Amino acid sequence: MESLEQIKIRLEAAVPGAKLEILPNESPSGQHSLLLDNAHAVALARFLRDDAQLRFDYCSNMTGVDWPDTEITSKVKVKKVIDGVEKEVDEVTKTARPGFLEGVYHLYSMAMKHGPLILRLRTGNRKDQVQLPSFTPVWRSCEFQEREVYDLFGVVFDGHPDLRRILMWDEFRDHPMRKDYSEPDDYEYEPTPHDDVLEKSKRHQAAKGTL
Amino acid sequence: MIEEGLKNELAKQGVVLTTLQELYNWGRGNSVWPLSFGLACCAIEMMAASMAKWDIARFGSEVFRPSPRQADLMIVAGTVTKKMAPQVVRLYNQMPEPKYVIAMGACAISGGPFKQGYNVLKGIDRLLPVDIHIPGCPPRPEALLHALITLQKKIEIEALTGPNRPRHLDADAPSEFPVPQFGEHDIVPAMNPLLWKPTQVVR
Ligand code: SF4
Figure (spheres, rainbow over the protein chains, first blue to last red):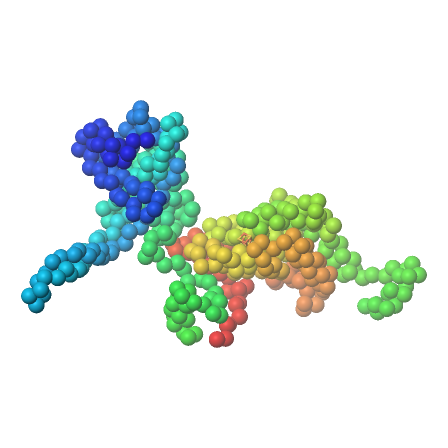
């Protein structure tokens, strides 16, 4: 399989105007992924499927990730003059990053026996811009998995032929896999809870007045 | 009532005495037909219990009925998700009296490993009157057979008349229970307060 950089260059040539970015993965597996822009995503996907050298004919997995609003701290070493002596000091900068939802696709080629190629798509935010283009018209195997991501994360897939909830019932309003979801407080606590459950149990007892 | 010792003595002489109640309960207790449905991994153990090695037929319960109209016993074998809970209650309501419920496994009695999840009912006893609870994840087939024998003992001593008579002989007792609806965050109602009365944990 070509390297991710080569694939990126070929994609940019094939789909003019497409904005692509390689997202590095620092873990030992080193599975770097390709971030696609939503406007050109379907055209890019079709190219990946139909190109004679790539032929990614199988989307094995489609999943979602919720990225809530966070602050990113980065440390930069800067030279500063303190008390007349030049020293190397860590300068900490904090940048707020607004949250978004992500769709992650794992592609393989049955014909060429290579893969995986990991694609990512990102929504504008987590509230009102939660649309992503659907890849179901390109790979049929995405259909149920995109429905699952719609159900559990609340990503709306434009162009999906049958976007309904798949695990929870239709009347359900929440998206349980979002980080800020809180499940119904409907279970009995063991007598000796600990960690997160201890916190929950305290909240539960305070609400019921049995603390 | 006949005295137990006298009865045994007469039986040795070939005279069998019984009561209508005993005869009735003996017949019912040894032909408990379960409803044939399973919800998760526990159902695999239930199936094993009906196969040759454990052979639930020894206790008269091999006739797993595919229709609730013909079943006497509902074995809730497995995880009851909130999406499935209304259907489970509906099946119970469709069973004719007398009917019994065995909650098999950690999931069916309390939510089990999914207790803190958002999509699993925390025990079928919140919606249905459970006669026998079997702990275990999954319980072995022997445990299911033990539950069945326990249920048979319970049936054996049911009185036909009087204030302690079972629900199916009491015209005022309910034989159907409300089917929960799908709500926006949970099933509504999440439990039946007439059935589910948890003991208060003293800390
Ligand atoms: S109690 Fe354990 S074995 Fe039984 S259904 Fe639940 S998870 Fe499966």
